Length: 108
Image (cartoon, one colour):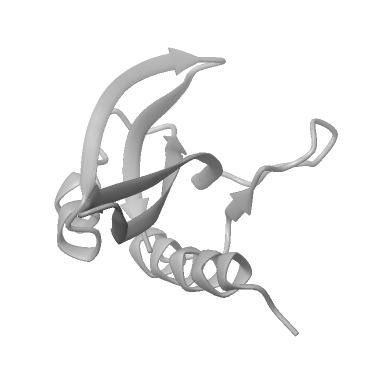
C-alpha cells in the first residue's frame, strides 16, 4: 500500500515528465546514476503547513526542481507556471557546460 507522500510524488513526477516530454525525470538520484539530458532532477525540500484556529487548513510538499539542459534558449518556465500554480523560478547557473534552471514548487 502506498503512502500519501508516495502517491503525491508519483503524480508530481508524471506532471514533470509531461513538461519535459521524455522520461528523464529523477527523484533524489544516487551519485553514481548515469543521467540522460535534458533532464529534471527533483528532491523533497520541506513540508509546508498553514494553520488557522489551531488547525491545519493547508498542507503541501516543497520540492526543489532542476531542469538541466544544454541549450541556453530552452525555457520551460511557462509550462511550470501552467502545471504548478505554486511554483517559483529561483535561479539559473551553468555547470559542466549544462544549464541548470532551479525552481521551488509546492505540491499536495
